[in-house]
Image (cartoon, rainbow, N blue to C red):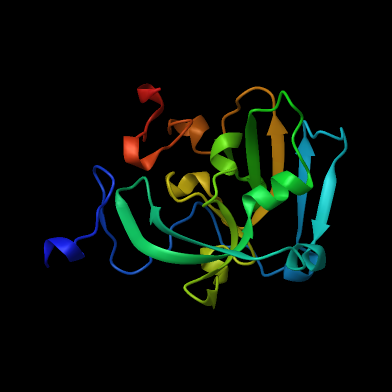
Length: 194
């Protein structure tokens, strides 16, 4: 491989063989007909908001090119994600002025905490497609959050909600010893590094 064709990976990462299917627990049943996205917590309006699948599908689409980094040390490079920019949701349902964090919620009560600045990244997307194909159920259909500069545990599959927070929280893996930020380029894998 020539130097020009070499993939630049975050420290400690290696190229994945294909696109591994990795998740905790079972894959949920396909209930896309009942899917909705809620935005709760410290919203600017003080109210909770909900988008059903038709309202979500009507939002503007964007693409984001980015790698998918697993904390278990593999990377799937150069994915083209299609979906709704996370920034679109933040603009549609703004957080309160004192909110600096978010807890993102998925099926089975899975959660991941994020700084709002990471969620608002221009590359963060509520993805419905990868490389031109709809996501499979095993990879997060109908919606998964993708935040390319963070480890994939920060971008849950089967996304169901965003909760704005004024104080940091700890999601599913963060409660089990993973780093609260999870920046792959800083190799922020474990809580003891905080």
